[in-house]
Image (cartoon, rainbow, N blue to C red; front, side):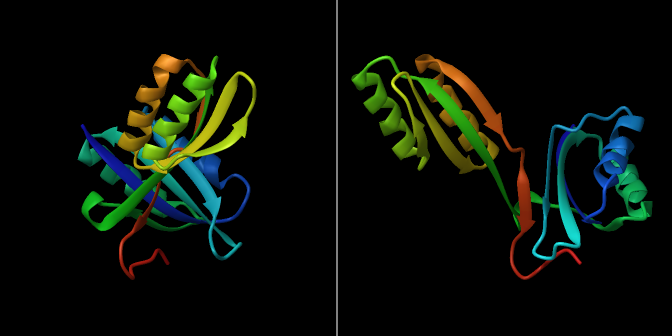
Amino acid sequence: MNRHVISILVENQSGVLSRVSGLFSRRGYNIDSLSVGVTEDARYSRITVVAFGDDNIIYQIHKQLEKLVDVLEVTELAPENSVYRELALIKVSVESPSERSEVISIAEIFRAGVIDVSHTSLTMEVTGDQSKVDAFTQLLTPYGIKEIVRTGLSGIQRGAVTLR
């Protein structure tokens, strides 16, 4: 089973996300990651779906997506021609000043930013590919992760190629 990153340009209308995700669920296919946002033109949104599976099933889903009225374009983002990023917000316990400085040092190595500080916790944001976020999370685990929020993968093709 391969990882597939599918980028879908859609009309920015209510119900579009439901119809797109419904295609996956009707086929009994799990979405590993889903991110949606308005594009540079407020009339359109971009949906990035990450799914693991058979190439034939993804091909069928791709064809079904293209048939939806509000879908303008569907493309698979190949790793060699695309850039992927994810954002994670991670809240970590810090019980002492030495723990606080250790966690901040780890954050600096990963170019993560400290975005909130309390007496007993630090909240950081980190962006990068999935493996970077996973590695950062693993290093913070011994300190006691209180909460994690991940955006899911976003991706864009390299170079001048655009969806439209």
